[in-house]
Image (cartoon, rainbow over all chains, first blue to last red; front, side, top):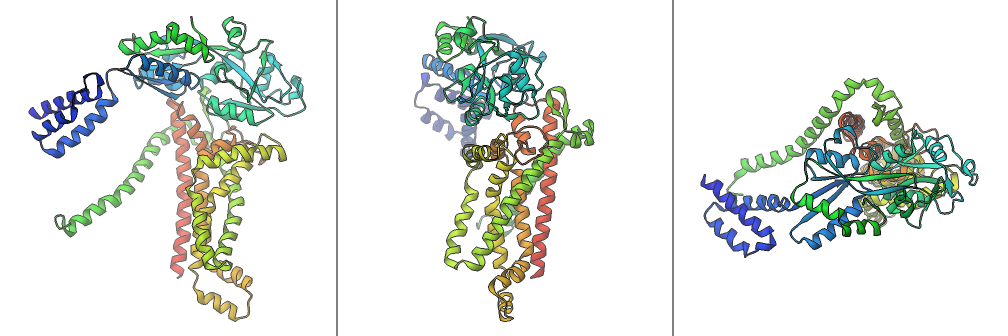
Length: 297
Length: 285
């Protein structure tokens, strides 16, 4: 019994170590306690307590999921931690399916998902739309094609159009680049375009970044990625004459748009609630906007 | 030491020796436990021989991946084995000893380069080159074969050298004394005598090629289809697991474990063949 009490004391002390606000010479305290117990046991417990104690402070928030929203979440987390010194926000990737799963299982307090429609198992989660994101159809900058209709996009990704000449380009084969099954960007893309049964010829890349690299390196390639990740190594085509710009997405003119959800199991509380509120605040939304996402409000 | 005593040390060493084996056993049990029930439920034939892989609609056929692994591995062998064996013959029989002593460790350093670096070189240099010269998407069986061929070189070369050097000097002297030239001695006597070791080196290389993941994901393009030419993009068994594991749940996840079972069985067979070949060599001496 007294042994357990000692452990509780130790953990309490270690909380003090972890929490900079009440930092008061923690080393001396731990050594003091150590004298009252067998040394090896203490050292082992201290190690575990430090590992466990610091990893899970009450103020920590973990986000996991969508690789498309991950860079934005990291930026927001940084800013949030600047303002709230005692908060610790960790951002992990994994994809929208991981976001949903970890929100359900509790592996992360907040799941990030960028799906047009949340799947059945995510219906009970508390979902907040924090932003909207356009999906740009991208090609190599040297490709002459500048506009595709939704139908043409569908035909290209279905594999019925196999040559750029069929959609107004040069006589070159089309290399379709897509994401792996389960990707939020892929399912959003397939749902918004509609009627896509991806061609078996399609190359598969496992992140927005590698899609961008593949398309930038291949003059015949066509892929799709989050609007916020466009750069000058690739060219976004206009869809049905609509350019993939923040303005067009905000005005609901650009057709390929998906919402980005933050998912919480149950009512958000404490730091989780505060972080979501920060994302929705003027400052948070402004950050998203300046980095290429479309604010939710 | 005096505190523990002879018996104690023995026991500690026994435990450490068995920990490696038990790790293998645990991994095997884990994969089998996760994957095999699925295979039976889904139907082994449908799983291994169907070519439809569409996790979202619940069809799991890994035949394209099996074919892809086969193509890529055979390709890697076609690139790596001749280069590696020829290199080993040159270094052990023709090059002056000091040269070999420098070159062999240098080649073994190839094995220390992380596979993601090989993949990166493949994506940035090899794939665009293949696309320019031969057409196709560039990320292909050919690109993967060349990259893997280079990656298995250290295994092939260093084990081949060791087995060629293990051939008794008297064999060579006898052959030369009978009037054979150096080249005749090499290909009719030395390499024949070292044959089982060389075969083992190639099979170990094969094991490495079939198990490689990162570099292959980067350069093979990962399309789920049975290749009809070396310029086609393919997805190997390893790439399939690594690409989709992070998203997979339920049946899909089990299907990926079952993919792992298939891979595990293939690699166990390869390694057994290699060690039998090695043992033959040892028995001959």
